[in-house]
Length: 104
Length: 313
Image 1 (cartoon, each protein chain N blue to C red):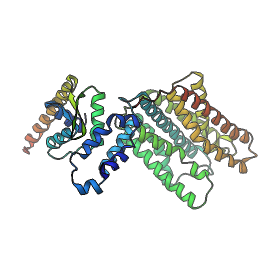
Image 2 (tube, rainbow over the protein chains, first blue to last red; image 1 turned 90 degrees about the horizontal axis):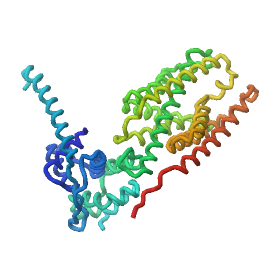
Image 3 (cartoon, helix red, strand yellow; image 1 turned 60 degrees about the vertical axis):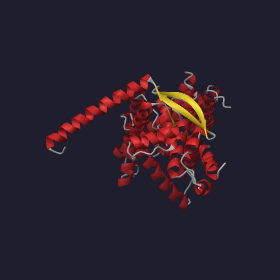
Image 4 (tube, each protein chain N blue to C red; image 1 turned 135 degrees about the vertical axis):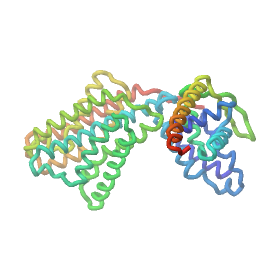
């Protein structure tokens, strides 16, 4: 799973979000490291929807503009949990080695 | 509608129509959500980053791997097959060079300059890297070969060399385009098994025949410098038509038959200096005619069975 997909899934884990809210949430989650372009975001969303990890929720019109909301599916929750477990194991392993060196 | 919105909508035209029908309003709304400055709305443009992201999205949707209308996936399948066939053909040229260099007399072993050694060995290494799952390495090799071909072809044009000097590089340009367009982030790795067998068959056939004919500068196979690749395309095309193979396979082989046609036509100019080689005229003319006929037949067969365009409002 790419970091972009991981962060978008994480953003959607709390509640269904529209595109602009996802971009803002990813910006916050990554502490400003990742600013998703519009083209990039829709590439990621297309992939997540195709994989069954996310789906469309509802549509709203805000100030004359279409806003489409996306939500996490059960499969998306499981995929995110599995990725968190994998990353956590990596972090634990790296932390153990660094502590042994006295670097942590 | 602001100038910025106009410019963004123009940029979005690189996306396929079915995708714009689905996403355009949503994407425009998102881009404009935090661009509220009047000066920006009047004089701004989406920016290089957004342009790059949109072009990348256009490649992924026009040559889709999944999650798209059947026509877009079919086009993607054709382009990916063109890339794989191009890589196998490229390996044939590399093996041919290696075989000629190792077994031929001095007249034939001209490519011993370091750059020739690197370029020709890379032509074999690139396809192997692709089949081993090292897609980035394969792309780097094909991209560098295509760029090198552009430089060499540019020099040939500047020196008013015969068209053949440029046509020689068409196959690697086609392969490079297909590899970069077809094997984007969403495309999965091709099943390597049949392609390993194809590579092995190409290596044995091309290497063996080149070694066999290398001692004879008048031999039809050594005189026709593009060698067996166009012949292999014709044979593969006939077999594919006979077995009523997939539409993607038909169109990919048709693409190669037609892409190699100018090169084989260009090689007819070889007749000026090898016209007395037994069988040469028949070989070169027959190759052109067969490529054209098989290419058209494949195009018709593949076109008749391609998926319909999706209905868009």
